[in-house]
Length: 203
Image (cartoon, rainbow, N blue to C red; front, side, top):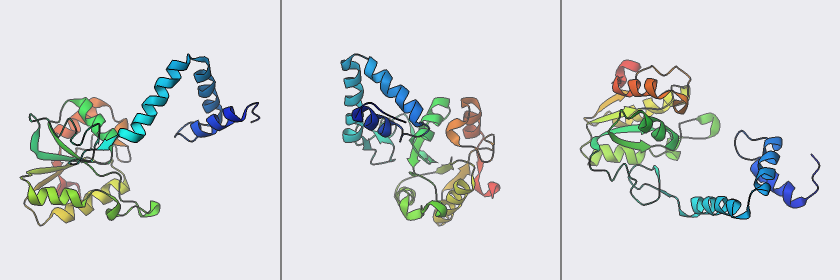
């Protein structure tokens, strides 16, 4: 792809590094931005700068937040005795959209994947075990994607929690095996949360 401007080329190269965006799509997006009033592009730039510089992780559940304690963890109407374990913030959003879950979350930040060099030490597993040990947690719901990596992560955490008197369950398999949680429709995902089963029964 031949560019008439180095500035244009640089912008296209950076945008094309976003997931699912090739150079042609990146060029179309950059040219669209150029056609917009400067203040519109300025708003986008400011939003991205604020995102990078000001975003926080909730100190309790590791969800993305504007403040130290996210809105879900600070909401006194939520059931603090039930924790739903998810891979990342997209899964929190997907489950929240169902309106079927009123407990709290724990965001692992990924799944165990030896092929990608991700082990238990790279995830927020220790802090989950500490919650179960130190707080009055009655149930842990495993809501990871039903993939080999998701099942491996579920089983690893299950073994870490065996010494504690806490109920463990997993979302019902209304979610197809191999599917990513964020792509499930809200009705199916909501029913999977409501009709969760003991984790031992899924082994």
